[in-house]
Image (tube, rainbow, N blue to C red; front, side, top):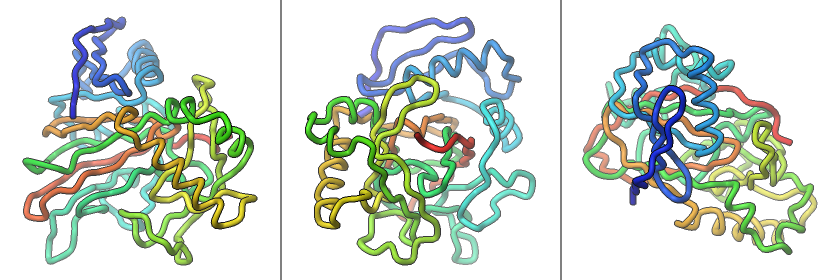
Length: 285
């Protein structure tokens, strides 16, 4: 359930209002159609590194404005679905259940989606994802965010010792919404540290996820499966999670290096359309 904390913290250029005890903050007083100068960019980064997920409401953004904002924070990643969603920007992806001639106009069209981090199946995953709401259902289709810093920091010491220095395999399969038992048909996969250090903050985050993390290196399969299930259950506890209820004009910017996100179910009879852009990060260490 969405919670707003009453206290506010002013930056040089805008106001930051925390969204929940777990993570997330709303940025007030910024129109993203305006250029982002270096001072404003640094204020955004400071707030982002502190709160992990930033929300700006009531924005009016075309593709150009959203891409321009995203480019302020680094090189953009091309979409990985194999589809082209924009004639101008290869980094733009539509997330939508709207269908034309029986085919969805966007990716990830329907229903629930398990917790994951974007592009963790690649050598260089996305550091930032920016998702902008154009049409939303009356109920459902909410995005859940989990704090991967807190998830790691609250692990029992014996589990921290078991995963220290280990890598895990992350695989992107044809079943892109819910975890499947089989990943033989993986379109791409990569081994990344189970625990990664954030390059800006230095904090350690638990870098596994229910949707795409398949096994832990160096462990028998049964032991790996049991340990992963423990990690998934731990990191998805409600006390680590902020649930975002979308409004038209919302844009969220989240840090894939220290958060996970998931989606709640929604009616197939209601339209949902969001525009996504991702910013390339660095190879996890």
